[in-house]
Image 1 (cartoon, rainbow, N blue to C red):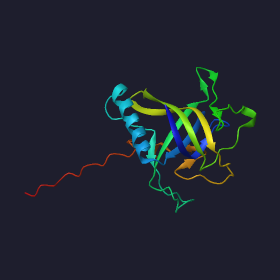
Image 2: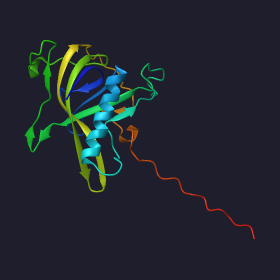
Image 3: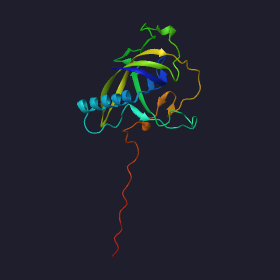
Length: 186
């Protein structure tokens, strides 16, 4: 599927992150399109998954210590990624300019927060041991309006370019609260 006019929050396509993945975090400014994407994810889960997924490819942004007054606090952010190696073979996310021309690897720009782009993605339901979830595959990116990355810290729970799993909607990473036993008065 193609998601048009996304706004990039962070994008890693030059080299994989510490987990061996290319990654993009983005928001969708058009509320109808945002709801449609969330519904597409839910439909993909209902077709292929069972029960409640522990991991979903979106989360609600929160202010970080570095950016306490971030204008996007409370926004739904989506995460798409791709393994740098698929079945042992190297994989590279394809980049295109606004005209649809492929951008060669040696000419790829440094994509910064605020870049407007079109994203080619697909959903993927995964299972590992007793854990299940759904992710968005990061297939290709068409840069419509580039904002060059100029360095600096990242917000929204970023650690070395990857996002903490416990910030995602649907994750049950907190310990369940223990019920207090009621004492009976005799």
